Length: 632
Image (cartoon, rainbow, N blue to C red; front, side, top):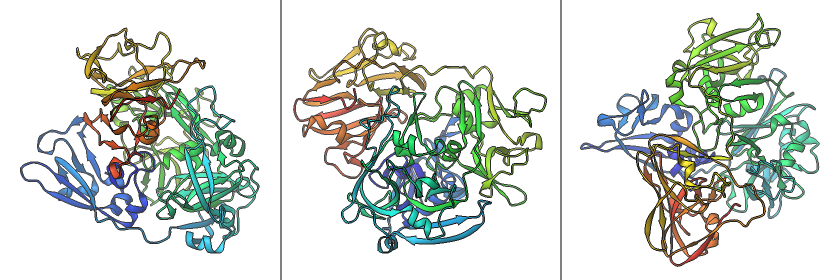
């Protein structure tokens, strides 16, 4: 339910910042109402939902099967909605009685001893106090600072020119140096590590040099508590937020590569490619600055299945801390010790097919788990070599692992790394679902998926279209390569004898799309699929060509989105000027139209809502105009 609340609690509907933590902390009431002949409602607190989001689940399936009977199509379940609080046949979720945050957010600065747990010194300061008592960066009117996002250009991943997606994060800010805050508790020891921990638990980290002796191209690391756009926190909803006061105003991917150690960098996965994204290190809603004597010892985990990958310690930790995705899990043992890590099934989803963690997808394949495969957790033994006599392993069936949150690959115990005793560190399998010590494999080196459902599929496509069962309104984000640019790319889709359709706005008529017809950017296509599946896309790599453009007619036009990264409707349709009035997308998962986006609109209709890659849209024009692609 937390995710659904995030769609309507403010004007940001999806993404990592969709759920407004500040509003939830201040408090509002969530009313869940049923339909049917005797409708009823139950009320819940936003603070309770924020504290334990997994206790409030809006379920569409039970044991893998769609809900039927009086509870259809959705039922509110979970520990927070147990018994009389459960709501079946959910028809409406309302957010009411919002309380405005009044207190200036504060940051706890804490310095730990060498064990990483014992507090040596700590203090808590409000952003108001920081402005009054410490040097203000950006004073008096703010400084414009940006973070570069992914390039989505495989041949230009780091983009030293900083001319591709340079303003993924773009604000005029004022803030306080992190070094000044650290000095309030005795500073950071040379070689130490600093963690910036958000109010939702998300962490980013860097080392002593990034705070006290940064490279010139990085600049001072600051926490921003004011922006020109929204003013002071809490009205600045992303603040306090990390920025680097770079000389050129842009902290790009190449700056990240030069200034941050590998374990501190951020990447964005799309179509099997790991794109550097400096914007990913700009942690927001910072609540704690934790100072550790030194970085933790590095390790890596090998994952082998349909694809093979190596997950670093830093990536594991960032995945575990991803609050919106719910990747983290904990278990308290009989001695009261709290083990934390990620569920085993999440790591299986990383390699059960070619989709490791593409944007907007659920990487774990339930259908493959239901078909049955083996999950083997392996400790290579003291010699560290796979396949020798001292290896130890245990094999589970995928049906047991499937979405089981009580089988945890733990990397911490009571907030500290596991003991390096030769049989535990760096990872150990724990959880209430494990009934024997043999299952609790320690010193984990590799997780292997084997069996008929696990098919090795090398990632070859530049992008994919994710089709849902039923009708899909789709598009291609770029010009496709020769031989891969006709409707034949949908040949493997079971359409159950349905045609593929295209709408001609000039003559206001529908056209059946033949297999030999070209599939072009800026065009919207309707296609039916009997099941969920992916359609690979191969882009035209020829640089000597003009970006696409399309003439649109008065009235409704079916158009495509022309980028591999989301963009606001306002930016996407800029070339249409004031001719466009509204845009409507289609939710294939729900098989229904989405809320319209209105030019100059507000709230749920605001034109700051994002349009998404590979989706088609209806756009209404008051007169003829030309739509230009926003990507080439």
